Image 1 (tube, each protein chain N blue to C red):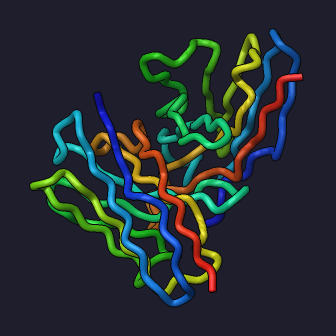
Image 2 (spheres, chains in turn green, blue):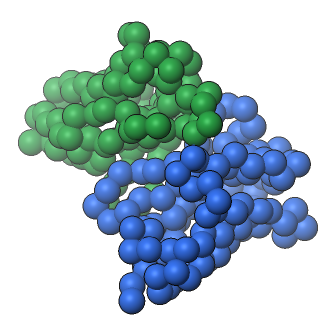
Image 3 (tube, chains in turn blue, brown):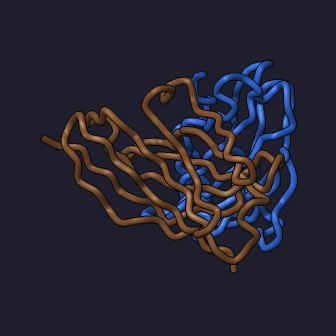
Length: 111
Length: 119
């Protein structure tokens, strides 16, 4: 099971919106609505930001939103803030013998 | 509050085994699954496997089949991950990660345990 494909880096200025893509296949992202997104600051454990493609856990800012089209999921951060600078990883359920797979990760830089 | 507290850093030699523990508190232990996810230095996240804390059933990533063993002790609310035949490529931070049974996302993460494999 190969890692889901994410851009290595995305950047934006404060207040702007950015979108991170997560491309899989018809066997993972395209097959299930079990895509989740995680934010990881340096030296810290990841934190759940989006689950089931587009749902936000309690306490996560509504500036974070998720969507999916076909085999590609996306995370959008609107009103970019300095604190959003971090690494972001998508994850999908696959239903296969390796039932979960992470994306390759995207470093978000706030200019 | 939910806490997942992992054991401390380990230094191992190639060929050794390592056992990492994860003690859970703040919730009903057996109503969740526990996953293990690792991250090599400067690299991304890698899913290793999961254990159903209710019945102990396991599901391992193909890559780790035959080399990883996940167990739990319900009397102490502790989960264990044992990885054998270590190589330098196993040098990583290992996280235990909670999943609400069947929800297929990871809502709480342990602080991570650094395992260094070096001769």
